[in-house]
Image (tube, rainbow, N blue to C red):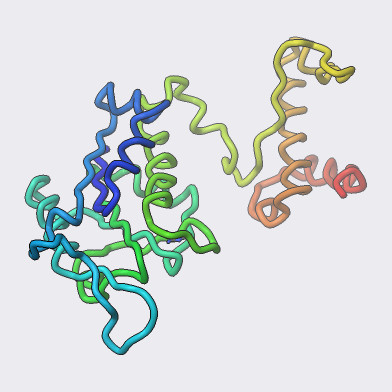
Length: 245
Ligand code: 6GU
């Protein structure tokens, strides 16, 4: 997976992406990150990339020519027309299935806007996907791009060392993760649930699945509607309905 980020703040993206698991994955060549500074494609000597909006109104608009110049530099380098994701609160809200879809691409271009947005004409020409990361407004697209790259990168084979962990986590089958415990066995008077010490793997699996169901019912009842529960599990949920509230 090769990530390309078109941004006015390349250092911000590089700093954050070169740490932790993603930094290691970049070091190992499992993924790559290349930022393109949109300002480098400003045609004027003041490196100006924004101007006032036609028709008036508050703020500044990022102009089409430098954005297009940055885009062309990337497409020329990779030699094909990639998916271009524009980060905007007006886009489709990002979710795990989208991450899985994007993870199949060889190259992904993220276009990060600032100010009051980007000239519509260049968006029309180059953007393939308009994506938001939730219903709140941020100052720019860099953090949303990093959120998306993190979610996508961890699905790339070899990025997580434990190959099974990407599969079994939250949102698999629309259920939340079960609770985890580690040493010590008693902490602040609280015991680790007995079943986890039993060594009985079938019982442990059953308990974990039930915990996932209870948590999802408590915190994300909207997800539970999409989860496929067996009739036994539905019965279990009914019996424990009182514990949920
Ligand atoms: Cl993708 N951009 C901005 N500026 N704000 C957001 C967002 C994106 N997603 C949620 N809020």
